[in-house]
Length: 191
Image (cartoon, rainbow, N blue to C red):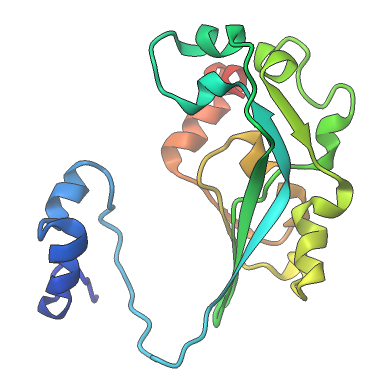
């Protein structure tokens, strides 16, 4: 199987982007050991569609990693401006791939978020109209959500997974660590 990390033809890439040491990235977990398959046909066309599936305001403390943990965020009184919630659709010759599914308009319904969870009560303001959900957005650009081949979730926060219901036939890919973490009580408490 082809692997660009060992191909001398891509060594300038390795030198430029990986400092000539892709193994360093492997050790740090920034690259995985999966097999990489190149696209052989140089005429292959990919179309990437950025989609905005609503917007969110969060506490300013969330933008900076500092000591204090969740309490620092909960006690912060400053809000960010409205931030976009993004998802991506990639039209690929082997099928459409969606990266993250954005948020759902159901976040405005009473009881959607657990009432006991302080983050959703005090530290996030979410604004998503039904037509901003990923399903209607995909239909608007000519992609049927039920025909999406694969959905890749970068992580399992609600603003990345809220639109999953639009993909009943898709293969859903998520890291094993995130999946295991989310299934436990700590995953529920983290949101």
